[in-house]
Length: 112
Image (cartoon, rainbow, N blue to C red):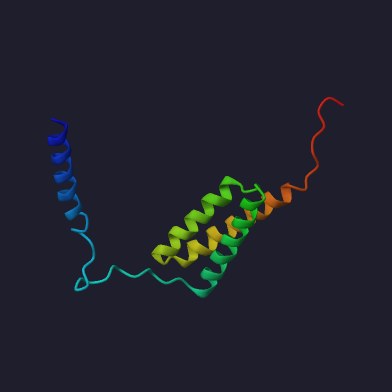
């Protein structure tokens, strides 16, 4: 019984693996739509925001608002919305820098 089950399972897996690339992009197909371009200013702001967020994350000082703003900027970059990229990138950089600055705040003393 177990040999029959093993054989049926093997046949099913072989059949499914043949369908794995059914929807893969064939060489004769049209390429997927290219990413929309953003302005040089927006690209610079996005790159700076990514670096600032990376630095804050490395120091465990990343605010969730900075992370959310960076994700919004990256999503806007995919659609080619330069104005939103700039706005969200500046917000992400600002909050990442504030998170890093917060590391220098004095510790609170409790019970004195």
